[in-house]
Length: 107
Image 1 (cartoon, rainbow, N blue to C red):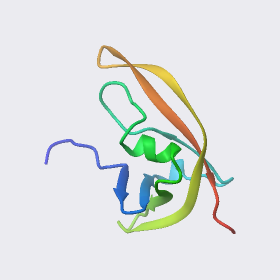
Image 2: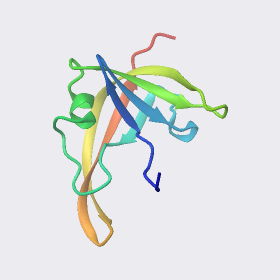
Image 3: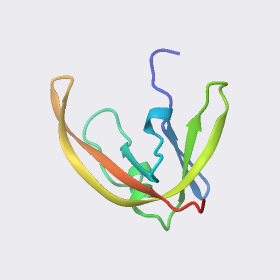
């Protein structure tokens, strides 16, 4: 299997599933997450990053991994902002996108 990281974003039908750890799950209804792409510059296009800012394309659901290995849908969100930063990784500079997502789930 190798050391490939598990997928953090899964696009399925009308949904984009975003998998977050306990530490990344917001309690105030705001999530700040790193975009899709581990190598080279992250871009907004025909990928999860594009789906996040184009909320009419897919609904975004936040999924939390639990200790027992099951996953649970914990929120539905929309993107309210994003920004890019430069990061130095593996002796290369690259652009990384961070998204700010807001809960639209009624509680």
